[in-house]
Image 1 (cartoon, rainbow, N blue to C red):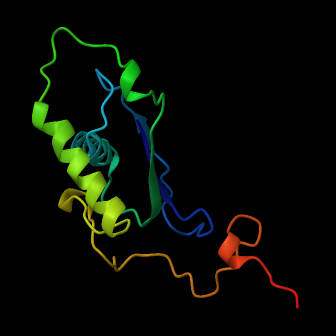
Image 2 (tube, rainbow, N blue to C red):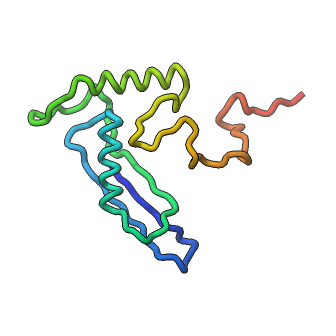
Image 3 (cartoon, rainbow, N blue to C red):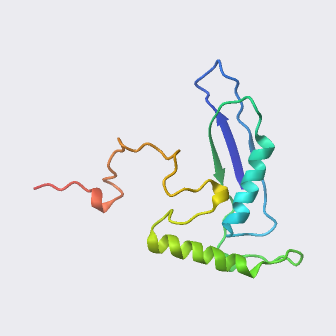
Length: 135
């Protein structure tokens, strides 16, 4: 996993700080709780008071299929973890993306920090429902 933060590079009068950190999980995981926990720990390690952060991100690296995960002799496996993530995925598939989420991730059905997409250009090349119709 890779986490990064950025201040605004277009404000030269503001203090600049662009840290990034990475972390390798001991074993592959599809548990969102584990991913959020590691991401929060990395942000806490990089965060410095007094900077005005503009954006940040999380990158997941070395993704593998769940069927080809190498086992680990020394780590315990919580059997409830997969069942809980399956329920979360099923609910979001049935009722729409973002219906359910983890509180630790700052999840909200309609987040205050959501992107302003009022002037979003149509996606003619990637969405059938936005294709131009000529009569």
